[in-house]
Length: 263
Image 1 (cartoon, rainbow, N blue to C red):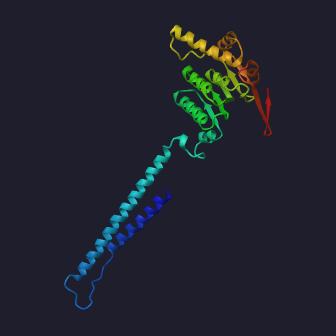
Image 2: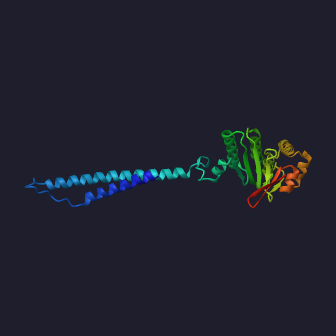
């Protein structure tokens, strides 16, 4: 950008010189007796040089301006994954091997979360990934895609609920690395039925319900009947109740900059 500005400024200077040369008065040369019209030839030559300078300067300035606009446009469209760490918060989180699952789960942010998990698993396999959750959940297909990705990674994924984890977000929270599933003391976890976004076909509903109950039961060491009852009641857990129910392992509290972990 700076180089384009320098060349653009140089082009404007050349343009100005050309305009000056074309507009200034050119005296006739009289060294002895000049041939008729000699002064006109001199003036014509100066005008030609000035016109050439105008052309060169104008083209240079125009090209540099166009390049500057194009580079600025490209920078605005640059994907967050390729942004410099100081340009995008997600890039800063990736530098710390942390991913944020914020807001409702949908196709777009589910793809970003899965791509980030795969990227961190590929770059430094074995070094824990942190998934920070504050979400009301989403469609079961998106939820299971994230859970299946976490299960298949070579790298352990620790989960932490920083605000709320509802429905599918609670399932992602529980699917984290055993012993490394955390919640802040004022976080809440809520279990709700996760089949609302599926087809109403009885077979599809039964299979989806069975998958959800089995996944929750495996993650919490609770029976499927207990999970089903909590989901039917839309039960809300505070951090300590969530730990007692098996949805998390640790309540993480911080006072005066010192982190206290309660198991």
